[in-house]
View (spheres, rainbow over the protein chains, first blue to last red):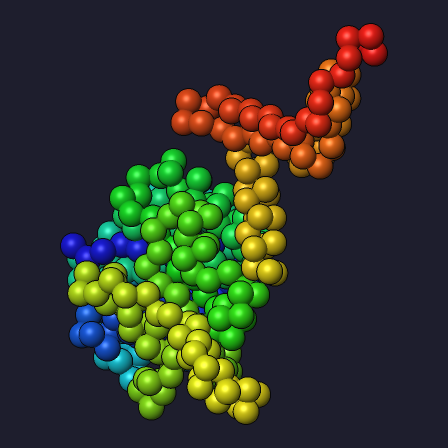
Length: 261
Length: 77
């Protein structure tokens, strides 16, 4: 049985889908068989981030309604052959994709994959309940902003009412220069505030901003390294968190970054 | 520092969410406690600190601290 992980946040726009895609890539690069499930019905974007929107034949709605099997709806990634995406439906009657039906789809996938990663919708309504109730582990994505931390705190409290063994946070969109100058909270500050274990810190990265996911040619960028460390932490082969401010500390680095602008 | 201010602000927000008590209510409580204590002590409003936290039993822990210059004479009561 593969591990069932939900990526959630409460607040929208913190980068759940981006983290989902890049974590999937980082795990696939470590030769793990990964399926990314878009749990966001109606506001689905994982297909676009994974660049598979033109390959969709069946979606999770078709699986729920019995038109196809879950494996038939999967789309294999072009670059990473062990990475698959299960696209969400543009619309499906909520009564047809109940938590139980969703549960059976995820269970079926977990038989053939090492990781089933569910991209949870924003908010704490039905879609959240459906996505969270299937998971054994939860990764709460948060950015260093007051509103995101507040919503993450509420979600962490809510997750305590589900049968989830492990709840951790991933701090996304950290700006190293602001963290180094004590203007922005760092990942550990946020973990302390939320009293929750941290598994990853992802720096703001122009390449990710433009393309949403890193590529093999871009595997040495700060965000790609951070996702690699996150994947290692999840696999249990490492416990390092990316230090976003390390490039901005020290006299010479400060001078270099001043000239870089 | 901007970061420290954010952390203090967040702590306050997270606490008020947990104890289900609006921030404004804490300010009202502070005013009432100040008016009560100032009948007995000469104290500065800014030194009065009230924190409300919730414990694992779901009860509220209320802590009031203040610094007074002196005790007021009984004739002023």
